[in-house]
Image (tube, rainbow, N blue to C red; front, top):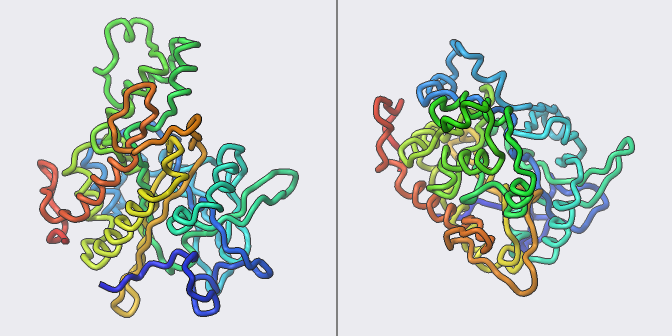
Length: 378
């Protein structure tokens, strides 16, 4: 199958690369990377049963729980760029993004991510699988990083953010939480909204839980702990965003959601699968990746309605706000199970499972009581 993905970092001349012609800012000859169209947040903690997902993904008009309005702080920007198209922030830090020009966006600078973005400039492998980074920009007294808008090459994109790894908190966060071990009423309330039977008798009495208890429970709740990834948010073309996937845990539930997301198109599945395999093989060669604890990072899946019968799809690795360098010459394989102290994050373990899922999408049955709208793909 002919490769269709363009990373913007190949040796092919930029003058012959339509993708680069569209995305390069004027007078900037150095094509570098960034982390755009982010989906990293826990802005909504109210969970809904699997059946509520069906209504959302079908575009149902009856959303009796106000399914979407509690979900994500979406920020639709309309930019004039060859044609008007919406840029959406899938799950995210409200106010952290601003529109920019020439197929770029501004993301509020955080020191840890800024350091990572600059390090990635020197890693030829990471440059192949991450968005372009154009440096730091100050606007109205606020520092931003200037990043490639990943949706610029699409006309009417559907977007899926998949948070990678077997945990979404740093080891240092867990240690700090234990040092200040306080009972949190807000976290208790979030927990009982999802499962009123989860808190212990003592936790019910105090109506509070500790942060470490809450953090580890959250990972077990979704597919993070078991599969090494979780669906964090989805925006279907021409539909409202949905972030109610925190209780999507099993292989069957994940496959069911992803089949609907790609509209049962096998061509789209194959292109996303090819790119996911490319990302995996590239990460296995990256010195940056081996020398960092990669927490809270995602793969962003984007696909478009077929144009003249040809599907368009791509995947990028995004978000480095929690990515932390290891001490000394320590290296991670990103597949070894996490034991506190080893800093393993399970990123490649999750990517292995995600690749396997896309390879066998049609062979994974729908969850009990649910049916696919169309014959399964793949």
